[in-house]
Image 1 (cartoon, one colour):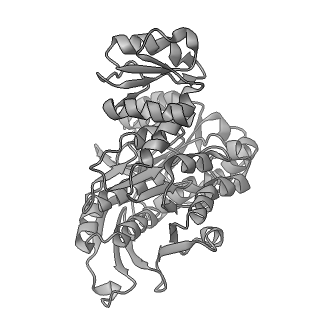
Image 2 (cartoon, rainbow, N blue to C red):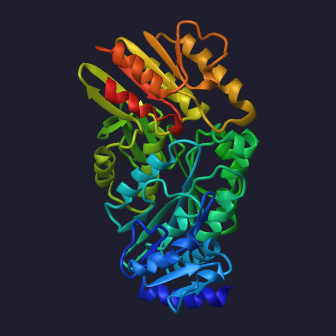
Image 3 (cartoon, helix red, strand yellow):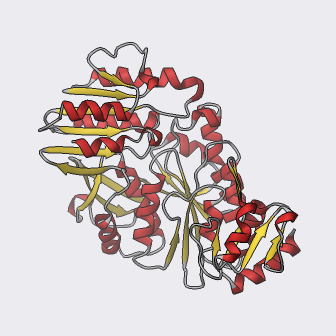
Length: 437
Protein backbone atom coordinates (compact mmCIF):
# COMPACT_ATOMS: atom_id res chain seq x y z
CA UNK A 1 0.00 0.00 0.00
CA UNK A 2 2.88 2.39 0.81
CA UNK A 3 4.28 2.18 -2.73
CA UNK A 4 0.82 2.80 -4.14
CA UNK A 5 0.33 5.85 -1.85
CA UNK A 6 3.75 7.21 -2.86
CA UNK A 7 2.68 7.02 -6.50
CA UNK A 8 -0.68 8.59 -5.65
CA UNK A 9 1.16 11.38 -3.85
CA UNK A 10 3.13 12.22 -6.99
CA UNK A 11 -0.20 12.72 -8.74
CA UNK A 12 -1.48 14.78 -5.79
CA UNK A 13 1.56 17.09 -6.06
CA UNK A 14 0.45 18.00 -9.57
CA UNK A 15 -3.26 18.04 -8.69
CA UNK A 16 -3.37 19.22 -5.03
CA UNK A 17 -7.14 19.45 -4.71
CA UNK A 18 -9.29 16.60 -3.44
CA UNK A 19 -13.05 16.23 -3.73
CA UNK A 20 -15.56 13.60 -2.62
CA UNK A 21 -18.79 15.10 -3.99
CA UNK A 22 -19.57 15.42 -7.70
CA UNK A 23 -21.91 18.32 -6.90
CA UNK A 24 -18.85 20.37 -5.88
CA UNK A 25 -16.25 19.62 -8.53
CA UNK A 26 -13.10 21.68 -9.02
CA UNK A 27 -11.36 21.37 -12.37
CA UNK A 28 -8.17 19.30 -12.11
CA UNK A 29 -9.07 17.78 -8.73
CA UNK A 30 -8.71 14.16 -7.63
CA UNK A 31 -12.07 12.52 -6.91
CA UNK A 32 -12.16 9.93 -4.12
CA UNK A 33 -15.10 7.57 -4.55
CA UNK A 34 -16.08 7.13 -0.92
CA UNK A 35 -18.91 4.86 0.17
CA UNK A 36 -21.69 5.62 2.64
CA UNK A 37 -24.63 3.82 4.16
CA UNK A 38 -26.85 4.82 1.23
CA UNK A 39 -24.47 5.46 -1.65
CA UNK A 40 -21.50 4.04 -3.54
CA UNK A 41 -19.08 6.73 -4.67
CA UNK A 42 -17.69 4.43 -7.36
CA UNK A 43 -20.86 4.96 -9.35
CA UNK A 44 -20.07 8.70 -9.56
CA UNK A 45 -16.42 8.34 -10.60
CA UNK A 46 -16.99 8.55 -14.37
CA UNK A 47 -19.20 11.62 -13.91
CA UNK A 48 -16.49 13.26 -11.76
CA UNK A 49 -13.92 12.89 -14.55
CA UNK A 50 -16.38 14.10 -17.17
CA UNK A 51 -17.05 17.21 -15.04
CA UNK A 52 -13.35 18.08 -14.92
CA UNK A 53 -11.57 15.98 -12.31
CA UNK A 54 -8.10 14.94 -13.42
CA UNK A 55 -8.35 11.55 -11.71
CA UNK A 56 -10.85 9.37 -9.89
CA UNK A 57 -9.79 6.94 -7.16
CA UNK A 58 -12.05 3.86 -7.02
CA UNK A 59 -12.03 0.50 -5.21
CA UNK A 60 -14.25 -1.56 -7.54
CA UNK A 61 -12.49 -2.59 -10.75
CA UNK A 62 -15.60 -2.41 -12.91
CA UNK A 63 -15.53 1.39 -12.52
CA UNK A 64 -12.02 1.77 -13.94
CA UNK A 65 -12.76 3.46 -17.27
CA UNK A 66 -9.31 4.48 -18.45
CA UNK A 67 -5.96 5.95 -17.46
CA UNK A 68 -7.63 8.66 -15.34
CA UNK A 69 -9.02 6.04 -12.98
CA UNK A 70 -6.86 4.76 -10.13
CA UNK A 71 -7.77 1.46 -8.48
CA UNK A 72 -7.01 0.96 -4.77
CA UNK A 73 -8.16 -1.76 -2.34
CA UNK A 74 -10.09 0.73 -0.19
CA UNK A 75 -10.78 4.37 -1.12
CA UNK A 76 -11.24 5.63 2.45
CA UNK A 77 -8.00 4.02 3.61
CA UNK A 78 -6.21 5.48 0.57
CA UNK A 79 -7.53 8.96 1.41
CA UNK A 80 -6.38 8.63 5.01
CA UNK A 81 -2.96 7.25 4.04
CA UNK A 82 -2.46 10.03 1.48
CA UNK A 83 -3.35 12.63 4.13
CA UNK A 84 -0.83 11.15 6.55
CA UNK A 85 1.83 11.02 3.82
CA UNK A 86 1.18 14.70 3.07
CA UNK A 87 1.21 15.66 6.75
CA UNK A 88 4.71 14.17 7.10
CA UNK A 89 6.01 16.68 4.55
CA UNK A 90 5.52 19.47 7.11
CA UNK A 91 7.76 20.24 10.05
CA UNK A 92 5.34 22.62 11.75
CA UNK A 93 3.37 22.39 15.02
CA UNK A 94 0.25 20.24 14.75
CA UNK A 95 -2.31 20.86 17.50
CA UNK A 96 -5.16 18.40 18.08
CA UNK A 97 -8.27 19.40 19.99
CA UNK A 98 -11.13 17.26 21.23
CA UNK A 99 -13.61 17.24 24.11
CA UNK A 100 -17.26 16.62 24.95
CA UNK A 101 -18.25 20.30 24.91
CA UNK A 102 -16.85 23.48 23.40
CA UNK A 103 -14.24 21.98 21.11
CA UNK A 104 -15.38 23.79 17.96
CA UNK A 105 -15.66 27.16 19.73
CA UNK A 106 -12.25 26.61 21.34
CA UNK A 107 -10.78 25.61 17.99
CA UNK A 108 -12.07 28.84 16.43
CA UNK A 109 -10.69 30.94 19.30
CA UNK A 110 -7.29 29.21 19.15
CA UNK A 111 -7.12 29.70 15.39
CA UNK A 112 -7.98 33.39 15.63
CA UNK A 113 -5.40 34.00 18.34
CA UNK A 114 -2.59 32.07 16.62
CA UNK A 115 -3.42 33.77 13.32
CA UNK A 116 -2.27 37.06 14.81
CA UNK A 117 1.27 35.77 14.31
CA UNK A 118 1.13 32.68 12.08
CA UNK A 119 -0.46 31.40 8.89
CA UNK A 120 -2.71 28.73 10.41
CA UNK A 121 -4.52 25.82 8.79
CA UNK A 122 -7.61 25.00 10.83
CA UNK A 123 -10.46 22.53 10.57
CA UNK A 124 -13.30 24.12 8.63
CA UNK A 125 -16.68 23.94 10.35
CA UNK A 126 -16.95 20.58 12.06
CA UNK A 127 -15.06 18.43 9.53
CA UNK A 128 -13.58 16.53 12.45
CA UNK A 129 -14.15 12.85 11.65
CA UNK A 130 -12.41 10.05 9.76
CA UNK A 131 -13.11 11.85 6.47
CA UNK A 132 -12.96 15.48 7.57
CA UNK A 133 -9.53 15.23 9.22
CA UNK A 134 -7.85 13.79 6.09
CA UNK A 135 -9.51 16.42 3.89
CA UNK A 136 -8.24 19.14 6.24
CA UNK A 137 -4.70 17.78 6.18
CA UNK A 138 -4.72 17.57 2.38
CA UNK A 139 -5.39 21.31 2.22
CA UNK A 140 -2.01 22.05 3.83
CA UNK A 141 0.29 24.18 1.68
CA UNK A 142 3.89 25.34 2.02
CA UNK A 143 2.58 28.68 3.29
CA UNK A 144 1.11 27.21 6.47
CA UNK A 145 3.12 27.62 9.66
CA UNK A 146 0.82 25.77 12.05
CA UNK A 147 -2.16 23.39 11.96
CA UNK A 148 -5.11 23.19 14.37
CA UNK A 149 -7.00 19.93 13.89
CA UNK A 150 -10.35 19.29 15.58
CA UNK A 151 -11.10 15.65 16.35
CA UNK A 152 -14.62 14.40 17.04
CA UNK A 153 -15.66 10.94 18.09
CA UNK A 154 -18.74 8.93 18.99
CA UNK A 155 -17.05 5.60 19.70
CA UNK A 156 -13.90 4.27 21.35
CA UNK A 157 -10.88 4.05 19.04
CA UNK A 158 -11.82 6.92 16.74
CA UNK A 159 -9.52 9.54 18.32
CA UNK A 160 -6.65 7.04 18.31
CA UNK A 161 -7.18 6.47 14.58
CA UNK A 162 -7.32 10.20 13.86
CA UNK A 163 -4.06 10.72 15.79
CA UNK A 164 -2.33 8.16 13.59
CA UNK A 165 -3.41 10.19 10.56
CA UNK A 166 -2.66 13.71 11.86
CA UNK A 167 0.28 12.85 14.18
CA UNK A 168 -0.22 15.87 16.49
CA UNK A 169 2.62 17.27 18.59
CA UNK A 170 0.29 19.16 20.95
CA UNK A 171 -3.08 18.24 22.38
CA UNK A 172 -5.97 19.72 24.30
CA UNK A 173 -9.13 18.14 25.68
CA UNK A 174 -11.65 20.83 26.58
CA UNK A 175 -13.49 18.55 29.02
CA UNK A 176 -14.89 15.07 29.57
CA UNK A 177 -18.68 15.19 29.63
CA UNK A 178 -21.67 12.91 29.26
CA UNK A 179 -21.91 13.02 25.46
CA UNK A 180 -22.59 10.25 22.88
CA UNK A 181 -23.11 7.81 25.76
CA UNK A 182 -24.79 5.32 23.44
CA UNK A 183 -21.78 5.00 21.15
CA UNK A 184 -19.22 5.07 23.95
CA UNK A 185 -21.07 2.59 26.15
CA UNK A 186 -21.31 4.99 29.09
CA UNK A 187 -19.26 7.69 30.87
CA UNK A 188 -16.18 5.49 31.25
CA UNK A 189 -16.17 4.97 27.50
CA UNK A 190 -16.21 8.74 26.95
CA UNK A 191 -13.19 9.11 29.22
CA UNK A 192 -11.33 6.29 27.49
CA UNK A 193 -12.09 7.63 24.01
CA UNK A 194 -11.04 11.23 24.68
CA UNK A 195 -8.02 9.97 26.60
CA UNK A 196 -6.68 8.40 23.42
CA UNK A 197 -5.36 11.86 22.51
CA UNK A 198 -3.39 12.03 25.77
CA UNK A 199 -2.00 8.54 25.16
CA UNK A 200 -0.77 9.53 21.71
CA UNK A 201 0.83 12.78 22.93
CA UNK A 202 2.55 10.86 25.72
CA UNK A 203 4.08 8.35 23.27
CA UNK A 204 5.28 11.21 21.11
CA UNK A 205 6.65 13.14 24.11
CA UNK A 206 4.50 16.08 23.07
CA UNK A 207 2.84 18.77 25.15
CA UNK A 208 -0.69 19.01 26.55
CA UNK A 209 -2.61 22.17 27.35
CA UNK A 210 -4.79 21.43 30.35
CA UNK A 211 -7.39 23.08 32.55
CA UNK A 212 -5.70 22.68 35.94
CA UNK A 213 -9.05 22.80 37.75
CA UNK A 214 -10.41 19.74 35.96
CA UNK A 215 -9.58 16.86 38.29
CA UNK A 216 -10.41 14.24 35.68
CA UNK A 217 -8.03 15.73 33.12
CA UNK A 218 -5.31 16.25 35.72
CA UNK A 219 -5.44 12.58 36.65
CA UNK A 220 -5.44 11.50 33.00
CA UNK A 221 -2.43 13.71 32.17
CA UNK A 222 -0.08 12.30 34.83
CA UNK A 223 3.33 11.57 33.35
CA UNK A 224 2.84 13.86 30.34
CA UNK A 225 4.36 17.31 29.76
CA UNK A 226 1.72 19.97 30.33
CA UNK A 227 1.11 23.70 30.08
CA UNK A 228 -1.68 24.65 32.45
CA UNK A 229 -4.41 27.28 32.63
CA UNK A 230 -6.99 28.13 35.29
CA UNK A 231 -7.76 30.64 38.02
CA UNK A 232 -5.14 29.79 40.65
CA UNK A 233 -1.68 31.38 40.81
CA UNK A 234 0.08 28.03 40.25
CA UNK A 235 -0.90 27.77 36.58
CA UNK A 236 1.01 28.95 33.51
CA UNK A 237 -1.92 31.09 32.36
CA UNK A 238 -4.07 32.55 35.13
CA UNK A 239 -7.47 34.02 34.39
CA UNK A 240 -10.19 35.84 36.28
CA UNK A 241 -13.82 35.83 35.24
CA UNK A 242 -15.11 39.37 35.84
CA UNK A 243 -18.69 38.74 34.74
CA UNK A 244 -20.89 36.96 32.23
CA UNK A 245 -24.09 38.96 31.84
CA UNK A 246 -24.43 37.46 29.28
CA UNK A 247 -21.09 38.14 27.56
CA UNK A 248 -17.89 36.94 29.19
CA UNK A 249 -15.60 39.66 30.50
CA UNK A 250 -12.25 38.44 31.82
CA UNK A 251 -8.61 39.17 32.58
CA UNK A 252 -5.56 36.95 32.25
CA UNK A 253 -1.81 36.95 32.74
CA UNK A 254 1.20 34.72 32.24
CA UNK A 255 2.70 33.04 35.29
CA UNK A 256 5.87 35.11 35.04
CA UNK A 257 4.00 38.42 34.76
CA UNK A 258 4.64 40.93 37.55
CA UNK A 259 1.43 42.85 36.89
CA UNK A 260 -1.48 41.84 39.19
CA UNK A 261 -4.58 40.56 37.42
CA UNK A 262 -6.67 43.37 38.84
CA UNK A 263 -4.50 45.95 37.07
CA UNK A 264 -4.52 44.26 33.68
CA UNK A 265 -6.69 45.11 30.70
CA UNK A 266 -10.12 43.47 30.68
CA UNK A 267 -11.10 41.40 27.65
CA UNK A 268 -14.69 42.08 26.54
CA UNK A 269 -15.84 39.14 24.45
CA UNK A 270 -18.90 38.47 22.33
CA UNK A 271 -19.32 35.00 23.83
CA UNK A 272 -22.33 34.43 26.06
CA UNK A 273 -22.20 32.02 28.97
CA UNK A 274 -19.69 31.68 31.77
CA UNK A 275 -18.95 28.15 30.54
CA UNK A 276 -17.06 29.83 27.67
CA UNK A 277 -14.52 31.26 30.13
CA UNK A 278 -12.55 27.99 30.04
CA UNK A 279 -12.66 27.95 26.24
CA UNK A 280 -11.25 31.49 26.13
CA UNK A 281 -8.48 30.64 28.60
CA UNK A 282 -7.55 27.60 26.51
CA UNK A 283 -7.05 29.85 23.49
CA UNK A 284 -4.92 32.21 25.57
CA UNK A 285 -2.77 29.30 26.75
CA UNK A 286 -2.06 28.11 23.19
CA UNK A 287 -1.38 31.56 21.77
CA UNK A 288 0.80 32.64 24.69
CA UNK A 289 2.85 29.44 24.48
CA UNK A 290 3.61 30.15 20.82
CA UNK A 291 4.64 33.75 21.53
CA UNK A 292 1.65 35.74 20.30
CA UNK A 293 1.65 39.29 21.71
CA UNK A 294 -0.74 39.75 24.66
CA UNK A 295 -2.62 42.63 23.08
CA UNK A 296 -2.99 40.66 19.83
CA UNK A 297 -4.44 37.74 21.79
CA UNK A 298 -6.98 40.06 23.40
CA UNK A 299 -7.89 41.51 20.00
CA UNK A 300 -8.55 38.00 18.71
CA UNK A 301 -10.74 37.03 21.66
CA UNK A 302 -12.77 40.21 21.40
CA UNK A 303 -13.26 39.85 17.65
CA UNK A 304 -14.77 36.37 17.78
CA UNK A 305 -18.51 36.43 17.12
CA UNK A 306 -20.21 33.03 17.45
CA UNK A 307 -22.36 31.70 14.62
CA UNK A 308 -24.23 28.54 13.67
CA UNK A 309 -26.42 28.42 16.79
CA UNK A 310 -23.49 28.28 19.21
CA UNK A 311 -23.88 30.63 22.20
CA UNK A 312 -25.43 33.29 19.97
CA UNK A 313 -27.25 36.26 21.48
CA UNK A 314 -30.02 37.42 19.16
CA UNK A 315 -32.34 40.36 19.73
CA UNK A 316 -35.59 39.99 17.83
CA UNK A 317 -38.47 42.36 18.39
CA UNK A 318 -38.58 42.88 22.12
CA UNK A 319 -37.18 39.42 22.89
CA UNK A 320 -33.62 38.48 23.81
CA UNK A 321 -32.67 35.00 22.60
CA UNK A 322 -29.71 32.95 23.76
CA UNK A 323 -29.46 30.42 20.94
CA UNK A 324 -27.32 27.41 21.81
CA UNK A 325 -29.03 24.76 19.72
CA UNK A 326 -26.11 23.36 17.74
CA UNK A 327 -25.90 20.40 20.07
CA UNK A 328 -26.64 19.23 23.58
CA UNK A 329 -25.66 16.55 26.07
CA UNK A 330 -26.29 16.27 29.82
CA UNK A 331 -23.14 18.21 30.72
CA UNK A 332 -23.66 21.12 28.33
CA UNK A 333 -27.40 21.22 29.09
CA UNK A 334 -26.78 21.66 32.82
CA UNK A 335 -24.16 24.36 32.20
CA UNK A 336 -26.51 26.29 29.89
CA UNK A 337 -29.48 26.08 32.28
CA UNK A 338 -27.40 27.11 35.31
CA UNK A 339 -25.92 30.03 33.41
CA UNK A 340 -29.32 31.18 32.13
CA UNK A 341 -30.84 30.96 35.61
CA UNK A 342 -28.10 33.22 37.01
CA UNK A 343 -28.56 35.97 34.41
CA UNK A 344 -30.28 39.07 35.78
CA UNK A 345 -32.96 39.06 33.07
CA UNK A 346 -36.71 39.29 33.45
CA UNK A 347 -39.40 36.94 32.09
CA UNK A 348 -37.13 33.98 31.38
CA UNK A 349 -38.47 31.38 28.97
CA UNK A 350 -36.79 28.00 28.59
CA UNK A 351 -37.06 26.02 25.33
CA UNK A 352 -35.23 22.71 25.59
CA UNK A 353 -34.90 20.00 22.97
CA UNK A 354 -34.28 16.37 23.79
CA UNK A 355 -30.74 14.99 23.99
CA UNK A 356 -29.87 12.25 21.51
CA UNK A 357 -27.43 9.30 21.49
CA UNK A 358 -27.67 8.64 25.25
CA UNK A 359 -28.50 4.94 25.01
CA UNK A 360 -29.50 3.25 28.28
CA UNK A 361 -28.95 6.50 30.21
CA UNK A 362 -31.53 8.41 28.15
CA UNK A 363 -34.49 8.42 30.56
CA UNK A 364 -32.31 9.05 33.61
CA UNK A 365 -30.51 11.98 32.00
CA UNK A 366 -33.71 13.64 30.77
CA UNK A 367 -35.24 13.26 34.22
CA UNK A 368 -32.18 14.97 35.70
CA UNK A 369 -32.69 17.91 33.32
CA UNK A 370 -36.36 18.19 34.27
CA UNK A 371 -35.50 18.09 37.98
CA UNK A 372 -32.87 20.80 37.51
CA UNK A 373 -35.30 23.03 35.62
CA UNK A 374 -37.88 22.72 38.39
CA UNK A 375 -35.32 24.02 40.91
CA UNK A 376 -34.95 27.26 38.96
CA UNK A 377 -37.29 30.19 38.39
CA UNK A 378 -38.54 30.37 34.80
CA UNK A 379 -41.67 32.09 33.51
CA UNK A 380 -42.40 29.40 30.91
CA UNK A 381 -40.89 26.02 30.09
CA UNK A 382 -41.22 24.24 26.74
CA UNK A 383 -39.80 20.73 26.32
CA UNK A 384 -39.47 19.29 22.81
CA UNK A 385 -39.02 15.62 21.98
CA UNK A 386 -40.44 12.24 22.92
CA UNK A 387 -37.64 11.61 25.43
CA UNK A 388 -39.29 14.14 27.74
CA UNK A 389 -42.60 12.28 27.68
CA UNK A 390 -43.64 10.19 30.70
CA UNK A 391 -41.16 11.76 33.11
CA UNK A 392 -41.98 12.90 36.63
CA UNK A 393 -41.95 16.56 37.66
CA UNK A 394 -43.00 17.96 34.28
CA UNK A 395 -46.08 19.74 35.66
CA UNK A 396 -45.98 23.39 34.64
CA UNK A 397 -44.00 22.60 31.49
CA UNK A 398 -45.53 22.33 28.01
CA UNK A 399 -44.42 19.26 26.07
CA UNK A 400 -44.21 18.89 22.28
CA UNK A 401 -43.21 15.86 20.22
CA UNK A 402 -41.51 17.91 17.51
CA UNK A 403 -40.16 21.40 16.93
CA UNK A 404 -42.75 21.88 14.17
CA UNK A 405 -45.60 21.41 16.64
CA UNK A 406 -43.96 23.96 18.96
CA UNK A 407 -43.59 26.40 16.07
CA UNK A 408 -47.30 26.10 15.27
CA UNK A 409 -48.16 26.71 18.92
CA UNK A 410 -45.95 29.82 19.10
CA UNK A 411 -47.52 31.23 15.95
CA UNK A 412 -50.86 31.24 17.77
CA UNK A 413 -49.40 32.10 21.18
CA UNK A 414 -46.53 34.53 20.54
CA UNK A 415 -43.88 35.24 23.15
CA UNK A 416 -43.04 38.90 23.69
CA UNK A 417 -40.97 40.93 26.11
CA UNK A 418 -39.02 37.88 27.26
CA UNK A 419 -35.54 36.41 27.50
CA UNK A 420 -35.22 32.92 26.04
CA UNK A 421 -32.71 30.10 26.21
CA UNK A 422 -33.02 27.70 23.25
CA UNK A 423 -30.93 24.57 23.80
CA UNK A 424 -31.14 21.09 22.30
CA UNK A 425 -29.49 18.42 20.20
CA UNK A 426 -28.78 19.17 16.54
CA UNK A 427 -31.32 16.65 15.32
CA UNK A 428 -34.18 18.52 17.04
CA UNK A 429 -33.57 21.64 14.89
CA UNK A 430 -34.69 24.10 17.54
CA UNK A 431 -33.31 27.02 15.52
CA UNK A 432 -36.63 26.89 13.63
CA UNK A 433 -38.22 28.51 16.68
CA UNK A 434 -36.29 31.76 16.16
CA UNK A 435 -38.30 32.56 13.04
CA UNK A 436 -41.54 32.83 15.01
CA UNK A 437 -40.23 34.84 17.96
